[in-house]
Length: 211
Image 1 (cartoon, rainbow, N blue to C red):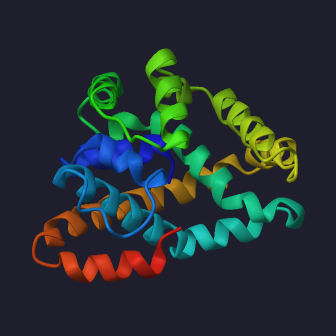
Image 2 (cartoon, rainbow, N blue to C red; image 1 turned 135 degrees about the horizontal axis):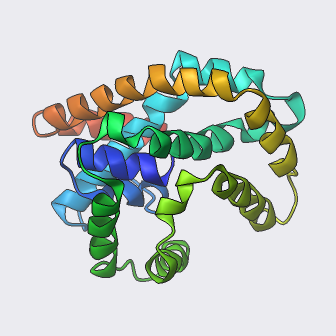
């Protein structure tokens, strides 16, 4: 899952929004140096990613992508699912996304990770431009694909074909999302319910399955 889904899952599970976001930026299994709520959010993020990558619907979707861009299918699905979540937000949340994003931006303003250039750069872009709401528009997904292409220095060219694929298979993707996402939310809820009593077991799972 991508930024917006992880933030929404944080809201749904009543866990720290920033912690759920940070799973893409903090590496390693020794997280005790972080505040409890941040560590918990990171571990929830990682558990959600493992659940997503191993889910039969997601595996099936990836196999539908053209062979020459299939290695990027997971990235494309994650980003497009953010768009689909924004489109169906009222179905999954009683709180407007602007309120949740405002809370996230406030947490972001009060946090830093010294020495983590990747996080610092993305945090500055988010604080300056506050662009999460732009995922209401599918064009934001397409711009994200091009941005990733550029970051990879065009070693993998996938953006245009990914755009065509999404437009041609939007009904299949939306159907898969509507089936998958409630299960994803349930997984997150169960993870948090078990977090206090089963933390050491979760740590072992995350250590084996981190990206």
